[in-house]
Length: 238
Image 1 (tube, rainbow, N blue to C red):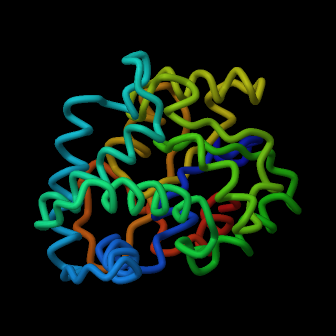
Image 2 (image 1 turned 45 degrees about the vertical axis):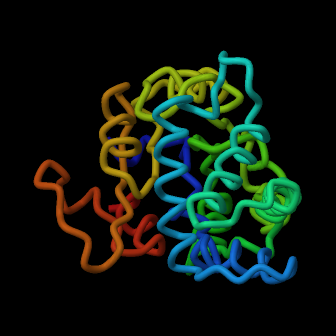
C-alpha cells in the first residue's frame, strides 16, 4: 500500500523547524534591551503557564472569538512578563509587540537536521506536498525565510482553517486541496495524538518522528517510526 503514496503532508514545529533557543532566552534578551533583568528560566516557566492558560481560554488563537492571533500572542507575552515580576505596562506592551514580530523571522527558527534534504528528495521522487500545522498565520513567512516554502503546494494553518489537529477537518481540507484520496497520502509529524493518530483516523498513512530517548507509543508499528527525517524515503520505498 505504501508504494501508492502520491502526496505527503507535514507538521512544522519540531518536525521541520525548531526554535533556536528556549523562549525564555529570547524574552530575556528583549527585556535586557530595555534595561530589565529577568532570568530566562523564570520566563520560560511563566511562558508555559501563560500559554497554557490562554490556550484553554481561547483555543486555536481564539478563532471565531473576535481576537486575532496577533492579539492572542501579544497577550501571552505580556502575561509572561507579568508572571515573572515585570510590571511597567508601557514597556511590556512594546516588548510583546517586538517579540511577536521577531518570531516571524528565521532568526528565531532553525531547520531540523535532514529536513531540507528530505524535502528536496521527496520532490525529486515526484511526491506532491503540503503543510498541516497548528500554527498562526505567520507560518508562510517563517517557511519562506527558512527557505522551505517552495516545496509545498499549500500551507494549512489551524488559524486559517478554524480547526486544530487532532480535529480531522483540517486533514480533510488538506485532502480536498491536494485532490487525493486519503489512502494515497501520508502525514509526517512528531506528535502521536495530533499528527500520527489524527491522520490515521481520516484514513491517511502516518509517520511519527521520534527523537532519541522519547518513549515508544505501543500502537505505532516500528515501520511507521522515524528516528530521523532521513529515514522517511527508506521506509516509503520498502
